[in-house]
Image (cartoon, rainbow, N blue to C red; front, side, top):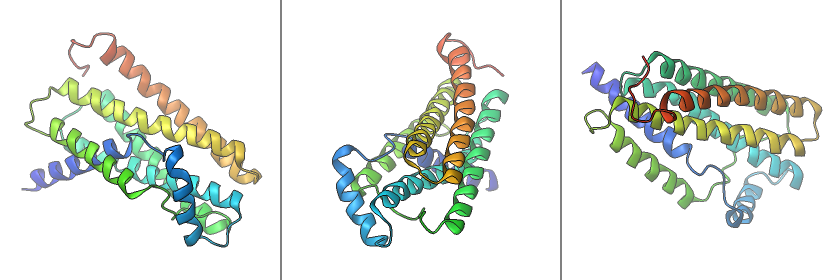
Length: 214
């Protein structure tokens, strides 16, 4: 029963991660509506700080999602290389989440509790993750290699979003301490992105019909 519960938890995590790593960030058409909603929740912030706080809030939500990546390990047995990548991604997500919580406490001009995404965008992401979870759940018929490739692509998308979010926010951030945090975090995501892409290219794209590396 315990193993079954762990697998169900892993499938749910897969739904969160794949859904959360798909089409991250509001579209240009959604930004004005999202900012208006954020303004009602944070009327004390200047326009500049409000925009940045929306970014920090998205970073925080996505770091929380990435932190749950480790639960994916309960779904199927991964190769050692994929296991190591998933663990590293989850650890980085957890660390960024904790740092943002500290920043939220220490910097009055930063909010991480805003919700800039429109409701339908959030529902769409959940639906995408739910579909992927069904396709790659235990017994769904996908091979270990297909499953691992899908997990790595989903994580790569999430990491890629986060590193670019750090980059554009660092360009707009005026506080020296916060700018350093964003630039340092971008480098950490860059390193993990390169590591994950290297594994995909050498183990899953160059020989797509081959066996998983164990």
